[in-house]
Image (cartoon, rainbow over all chains, first blue to last red; front, top):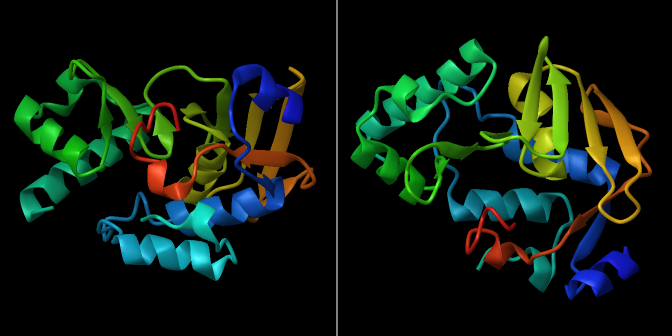
Length: 62
Length: 139
Protein backbone atom coordinates (compact mmCIF):
# COMPACT_ATOMS: atom_id res chain seq x y z
CA UNK A 1 0.00 0.00 0.00
CA UNK A 2 2.78 2.41 0.95
CA UNK A 3 4.52 1.72 -2.35
CA UNK A 4 1.36 2.40 -4.36
CA UNK A 5 0.73 5.65 -2.49
CA UNK A 6 4.31 6.74 -3.03
CA UNK A 7 4.27 5.86 -6.74
CA UNK A 8 1.16 7.96 -7.27
CA UNK A 9 2.25 10.82 -5.04
CA UNK A 10 -0.65 10.40 -2.63
CA UNK A 11 -0.60 11.08 1.07
CA UNK A 12 -1.79 8.06 3.06
CA UNK A 13 -5.44 8.06 4.05
CA UNK A 14 -7.03 5.53 6.37
CA UNK A 15 -7.05 1.76 5.95
CA UNK A 16 -9.95 -0.36 7.14
CA UNK A 17 -10.29 -4.11 7.16
CA UNK A 18 -12.73 -5.47 4.60
CA UNK A 19 -14.99 -6.42 7.49
CA UNK A 20 -15.05 -2.85 8.73
CA UNK A 21 -15.50 -1.38 5.24
CA UNK A 22 -18.43 -3.75 4.74
CA UNK A 23 -19.91 -2.68 8.05
CA UNK A 24 -19.67 0.93 6.93
CA UNK A 25 -21.25 0.09 3.56
CA UNK A 26 -24.22 -1.59 5.22
CA UNK A 27 -24.75 1.31 7.58
CA UNK A 28 -24.41 3.87 4.77
CA UNK A 29 -26.22 2.27 1.81
CA UNK A 30 -28.83 -0.17 3.18
CA UNK A 31 -31.73 2.27 2.84
CA UNK A 32 -30.86 3.42 -0.69
CA UNK A 33 -33.58 1.45 -2.49
CA UNK A 34 -36.26 1.89 0.11
CA UNK A 35 -39.35 3.75 -1.14
CA UNK A 36 -39.24 5.58 2.18
CA UNK A 37 -35.71 6.84 1.54
CA UNK A 38 -35.02 10.43 2.41
CA UNK A 39 -31.74 12.26 1.89
CA UNK A 40 -29.35 11.74 4.77
CA UNK A 41 -28.45 14.90 6.58
CA UNK A 42 -24.81 15.55 7.22
CA UNK A 43 -25.51 14.93 10.89
CA UNK A 44 -27.00 11.51 10.10
CA UNK A 45 -23.98 10.56 8.04
CA UNK A 46 -21.59 11.79 10.69
CA UNK A 47 -23.54 9.76 13.23
CA UNK A 48 -23.00 6.62 11.11
CA UNK A 49 -19.26 7.22 11.05
CA UNK A 50 -19.14 8.03 14.74
CA UNK A 51 -21.24 4.98 15.58
CA UNK A 52 -18.70 2.75 13.89
CA UNK A 53 -15.88 4.36 15.81
CA UNK A 54 -14.63 6.18 12.72
CA UNK A 55 -13.71 9.30 14.60
CA UNK A 56 -10.92 11.81 14.35
CA UNK A 57 -10.27 14.55 11.78
CA UNK A 58 -10.07 12.15 8.80
CA UNK A 59 -13.67 11.05 9.30
CA UNK A 60 -15.18 14.48 9.90
CA UNK A 61 -17.54 15.50 7.09
CA UNK A 62 -16.94 19.21 7.69
CA UNK B 1 -35.15 17.90 -2.07
CA UNK B 2 -38.81 18.52 -2.82
CA UNK B 3 -41.39 15.77 -3.31
CA UNK B 4 -41.26 16.03 -7.11
CA UNK B 5 -37.49 15.48 -7.21
CA UNK B 6 -37.75 12.74 -4.61
CA UNK B 7 -40.31 10.91 -6.77
CA UNK B 8 -38.04 11.23 -9.81
CA UNK B 9 -35.10 9.96 -7.82
CA UNK B 10 -37.10 6.96 -6.62
CA UNK B 11 -38.28 6.21 -10.17
CA UNK B 12 -34.69 6.19 -11.41
CA UNK B 13 -33.64 3.76 -8.66
CA UNK B 14 -36.64 1.56 -9.50
CA UNK B 15 -35.49 1.57 -13.13
CA UNK B 16 -32.04 0.53 -11.99
CA UNK B 17 -33.45 -2.55 -10.27
CA UNK B 18 -35.72 -3.36 -13.19
CA UNK B 19 -33.02 -2.97 -15.85
CA UNK B 20 -30.13 -4.40 -13.85
CA UNK B 21 -28.04 -1.32 -14.67
CA UNK B 22 -28.05 2.44 -14.33
CA UNK B 23 -30.59 3.82 -16.81
CA UNK B 24 -29.62 6.17 -19.60
CA UNK B 25 -30.73 9.77 -19.47
CA UNK B 26 -33.23 9.05 -22.23
CA UNK B 27 -34.64 6.07 -20.32
CA UNK B 28 -35.33 8.24 -17.29
CA UNK B 29 -37.57 10.47 -19.40
CA UNK B 30 -36.52 13.32 -17.11
CA UNK B 31 -35.89 16.92 -18.08
CA UNK B 32 -32.18 17.81 -18.03
CA UNK B 33 -32.86 20.49 -15.43
CA UNK B 34 -34.47 17.94 -13.11
CA UNK B 35 -31.48 15.59 -13.40
CA UNK B 36 -29.18 18.54 -12.76
CA UNK B 37 -31.06 19.31 -9.56
CA UNK B 38 -30.62 15.69 -8.41
CA UNK B 39 -26.94 15.96 -9.26
CA UNK B 40 -26.60 19.19 -7.26
CA UNK B 41 -28.34 17.50 -4.33
CA UNK B 42 -25.94 14.51 -4.53
CA UNK B 43 -28.81 12.13 -5.32
CA UNK B 44 -26.91 11.03 -8.44
CA UNK B 45 -23.81 12.06 -10.34
CA UNK B 46 -24.09 13.17 -13.97
CA UNK B 47 -21.34 13.10 -16.53
CA UNK B 48 -19.90 16.63 -16.85
CA UNK B 49 -21.87 17.28 -20.04
CA UNK B 50 -25.05 15.76 -18.62
CA UNK B 51 -25.09 13.02 -21.25
CA UNK B 52 -25.24 10.14 -18.79
CA UNK B 53 -25.58 9.12 -15.17
CA UNK B 54 -22.09 8.33 -13.94
CA UNK B 55 -23.06 7.24 -10.44
CA UNK B 56 -26.28 6.18 -8.80
CA UNK B 57 -24.69 5.40 -5.49
CA UNK B 58 -23.56 2.81 -4.71
CA UNK B 59 -23.99 1.68 -8.33
CA UNK B 60 -21.74 2.87 -11.17
CA UNK B 61 -23.11 3.88 -14.54
CA UNK B 62 -19.85 3.03 -16.29
CA UNK B 63 -17.63 -0.08 -16.23
CA UNK B 64 -15.22 -0.06 -13.29
CA UNK B 65 -12.73 -2.51 -11.74
CA UNK B 66 -15.29 -3.22 -8.98
CA UNK B 67 -17.76 -5.86 -10.15
CA UNK B 68 -20.56 -7.24 -8.04
CA UNK B 69 -22.77 -10.25 -8.58
CA UNK B 70 -25.98 -9.89 -6.61
CA UNK B 71 -29.69 -10.58 -7.03
CA UNK B 72 -28.99 -12.55 -10.20
CA UNK B 73 -27.34 -9.59 -11.93
CA UNK B 74 -23.89 -8.22 -12.59
CA UNK B 75 -23.29 -4.66 -11.42
CA UNK B 76 -20.46 -2.17 -11.40
CA UNK B 77 -19.57 -0.24 -8.24
CA UNK B 78 -17.65 3.01 -7.90
CA UNK B 79 -15.19 1.78 -5.29
CA UNK B 80 -14.79 -1.02 -2.76
CA UNK B 81 -17.03 0.75 -0.25
CA UNK B 82 -19.76 0.94 -2.86
CA UNK B 83 -19.10 -2.66 -3.94
CA UNK B 84 -20.06 -3.79 -0.45
CA UNK B 85 -22.94 -1.32 -0.60
CA UNK B 86 -24.62 -3.04 -3.54
CA UNK B 87 -25.58 -6.21 -1.64
CA UNK B 88 -26.51 -3.91 1.23
CA UNK B 89 -28.82 -1.80 -0.93
CA UNK B 90 -30.37 -4.81 -2.64
CA UNK B 91 -30.81 -6.65 0.66
CA UNK B 92 -29.15 -9.81 -0.64
CA UNK B 93 -25.86 -11.65 -0.38
CA UNK B 94 -23.36 -11.04 -3.16
CA UNK B 95 -19.93 -11.57 -4.58
CA UNK B 96 -17.37 -8.83 -5.22
CA UNK B 97 -14.59 -9.15 -7.79
CA UNK B 98 -11.90 -6.49 -7.88
CA UNK B 99 -8.25 -5.95 -8.62
CA UNK B 100 -5.82 -4.89 -5.92
CA UNK B 101 -4.53 -1.44 -6.95
CA UNK B 102 -1.23 -2.14 -5.22
CA UNK B 103 -0.20 -5.60 -6.47
CA UNK B 104 -2.69 -6.30 -9.25
CA UNK B 105 -3.94 -9.46 -7.57
CA UNK B 106 -7.46 -10.51 -8.45
CA UNK B 107 -9.62 -10.32 -5.35
CA UNK B 108 -12.76 -12.39 -4.88
CA UNK B 109 -14.91 -11.68 -1.84
CA UNK B 110 -18.19 -13.26 -0.85
CA UNK B 111 -20.58 -11.09 1.12
CA UNK B 112 -23.04 -13.10 3.18
CA UNK B 113 -25.19 -11.77 5.96
CA UNK B 114 -23.39 -8.43 5.72
CA UNK B 115 -20.00 -9.98 6.31
CA UNK B 116 -17.16 -10.37 3.80
CA UNK B 117 -15.15 -13.52 3.38
CA UNK B 118 -12.19 -13.32 3.45
CA UNK B 119 -12.48 -10.53 6.00
CA UNK B 120 -8.81 -9.73 6.46
CA UNK B 121 -8.36 -7.85 3.18
CA UNK B 122 -7.74 -4.12 3.49
CA UNK B 123 -9.65 -1.19 2.01
CA UNK B 124 -7.83 2.13 1.76
CA UNK B 125 -9.75 5.40 1.99
CA UNK B 126 -7.53 7.94 0.30
CA UNK B 127 -9.33 11.20 0.97
CA UNK B 128 -10.62 12.60 4.24
CA UNK B 129 -14.41 12.69 4.56
CA UNK B 130 -14.65 16.47 4.19
CA UNK B 131 -13.21 16.14 0.66
CA UNK B 132 -15.32 13.22 -0.62
CA UNK B 133 -17.70 15.42 -2.63
CA UNK B 134 -15.09 17.91 -3.85
CA UNK B 135 -14.38 15.52 -6.75
CA UNK B 136 -16.61 12.49 -6.24
CA UNK B 137 -15.36 10.66 -9.31
CA UNK B 138 -11.78 10.81 -8.03
CA UNK B 139 -12.95 9.87 -4.54
